[in-house]
Length: 98
Image (tube, rainbow, N blue to C red; front, side, top):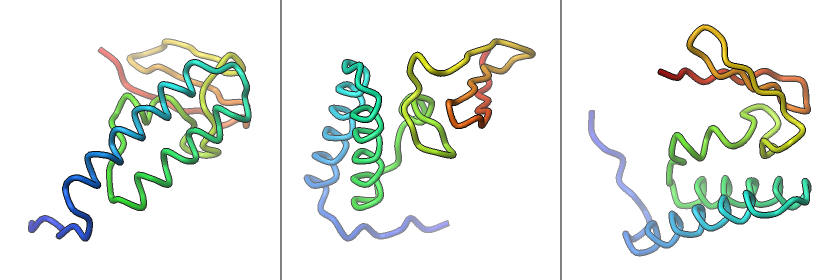
């Protein structure tokens, strides 16, 4: 399968990845729920604009349904090889672990 050609130069993609990392680290630092969700929204938009995929660790930090950052309001369970995270919106996110 051929790789998609990118419209953006490599230096812009590098900067986009750095900005995404910064936004996720800032989201982890703050305690304001709306600010954390805004950081996730901005990181996702940067990724879509520059065609940059989020890493697996970054994808596990927010809900795939409502895109809110997982914080203290989430319920975490370990069962049958999966980390089960119940978001504040009520959806269940499951991630495998070893």
